[in-house]
Length: 135
Image (cartoon, rainbow, N blue to C red; front, side, top):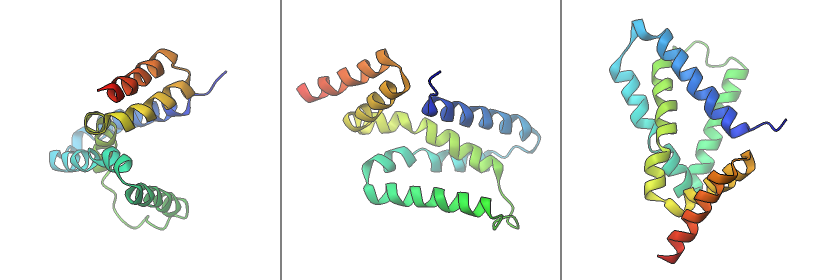
């Protein structure tokens, strides 16, 4: 059985977001969710546009994991709804990133689709790269 890590990660993030939205429905705050969503939208575009931002985002992710692992941030109150919005914003951020940097995103998505076993989807993005080069 071939494990598909990218599909598994996206599915996990979406399920976790839906569960947290259901769980936090009684304490809903539009400002918190929308702030997270708006902050999450440009993350993918920034990640692919600049190497320094890519390293910074990776470092922040590792730092966050270390803080959680050693329970160093437990005395701070976390806004779960903000992070749900941030996660959904980052996933939705693929659409404007694809629109702004079609060749770079198509190359990444083509390789990711082939590595996950989605041959038709990988061929579609590969053809999209070749179509953009001809224009």
